Length: 309
Image (tube, rainbow, N blue to C red; front, side, top):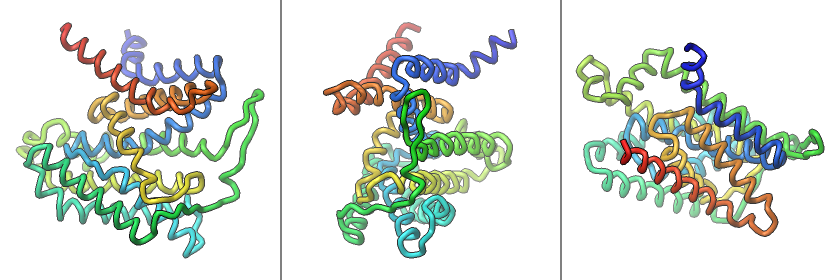
């Protein structure tokens, strides 16, 4: 009975392992690339899941905060000679402070409004951030080169970039850190309580306003981690993070609100799916269609299950 309970509790991870093993046997290169890219999707999607699950804000500026974090990393690298991975530390705190300020100045005004007002507000923030980056840095692509980012290795005849394995490391590290925070700290337990029942949490004396403020700030700050990891391998331009906004929402829709482990599993599964399509000659451009097609299929299956209950 205990083994059955364990398997049910961790069924998402077992699903992930099964998918990777099957693809690794069939298309080993796609399995490795999909694991790397899917982990990056998950790393960016985790903070959005936290924001939606606790604060309840649909942040359309999510990807633009990521772009801003990438430019901050770029500035530390070019002006101070700081390694992009080291610059994660100051960028984390810079984005946390920015998130807190934006929450206090804008988000609090629409917390009790409908989702339409929240969408319009965050869309406006997105446009302001995007245009500000265009004005300050222009649309000219930039880059930061670090020697170790171009390293590669070959295992069993499959050649792949070793730097991209950091996406996997950081995605799992952030997931574990968030899980420990929510379960082992008083503020984390308060955050979990607010996410489950805001009114009940308020009745027992939890300062829900502070929890919302902290969660929004830390969600933006986590994007600084993703930014630091991305900079050595991505071209830097104002809309570099925009594509991650919709993909992050897709992961949340697939995993469910507040399901952090589900975000990681969904991201890697979709990343592997993208990699399989890209490995087929002549079908590389279909990868995004497959990404969103899987989302539609999952939502439809979930709706049919609910109707049958």
